[in-house]
Image (cartoon, rainbow over all chains, first blue to last red; front, side, top):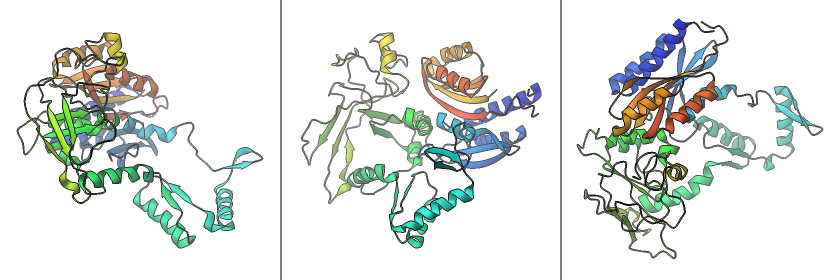
Amino acid sequence: MMDATRRDFIKRSALLAASAALGGASARSAQAQAALPDGLSWHKAPCRFCGTGCGVMVGVLDGRVVAVQGDPENPVNKGLLCAKGYHAGGILYGKDRLEHPMIRRNGKLERASWNDAIDLVADKIMADPSRFAIYGSGQWTIAEGYVCLKFLKGGLSNNHLEPNARLCMASAVVGLITTFGVDEPAGCYEDLDECDTVITWGNNWAEMHPVLFSRFMDRKKGESKFSAHKSTYIDMATRTPDPPSSRTTISNSSRKPTSPLPTASASSLSSAEPMTASLSRSTSRSNPMTARISGLTNSPPSWPTTPPKRSRSFPVCRSISSRCSPTFSETRGARSCRCGAWA
Amino acid sequence: MPISSLIVRTRPERVQQVVKRVLELDGTAAPETREDCVVVLTETADRRADKELWDSIEAIDGVTGLDLIYHNFEDLDGAKQ
């Protein structure tokens, strides 16, 4: 067993890192130093479990990863990680991980040497190079994608390369071009630190990208270099099935939808936050930058003090807290929920 | 025995209740509290129990988010000092 001194040492490192993460840049620098005394060698790596791009510090002992922490000097996550990052180290040693080549012989996968596996793949490719393709990943590094492209075009004279990124970006690019005039997200993470208003559509980022959500929560507390005002969060159509139409109005001045627009609502962490908003948007291809948001006010919330009558049988909390699920609302009654936003 | 530190983000008016509930869970310590967050140290038998403990913390009334800061899962039975 690890002795008490070693255990206490690790605990102190863990607490120091967490305390530093709550502070500013200087404290985060201290967090970076905090990792050093625990006897591990620390290395930088990216977390590849989602597209946020968090920096991870990986602690190695005797050639084995034994610890992870958020990189305090990374401008994306500033020392924070989420549950996905938690698995960034341990997943290397998963029992179901493929650790050596396997070749199917007589219907059964058998362990094979690397030479045998590479020879088999090469024989299959060279039998007809024009029929060989690679289906890659959006989590490829640039270098990996470059090598595959060169291998296919320069080596095999074909162009059969696709990544799974095509599935999401084909639709995303259309939406981004139409809305913002560029084919990639038009903002950057620093916008979350300085914005006055954030509007989301069906995006539960507290659950899906909690590191960025925490970053916005810091902004919501009023921590901005350029504005003394607290930020406003307007969440539309993420989890409220049929809220009153009076809360947020969406109008489209240039094209009438053939079917009713999805129900929209505004929500916030605090009932004292501004809630009313209206959004008008032009979808003209000649002037894609005409999207504008108007009518954001600081007036008191306009929704009723009692929950609206709902067509569905379950109540839904309008908080942005992703953990406040309908199930919890049901168990606690229609007038309250776990996070308290319903009450 | 994994050792982890977390920042548990809470609704400001419920931070004390959250601390109380966190300390009721086995393997936790909450040595630092701020206006709307709590630093929590967890120590569990294995990584699965660690994750289950985190889920329990996330399910506490008033918790709005949870950030991992530090996670150590050294082989504690391997006698590496």
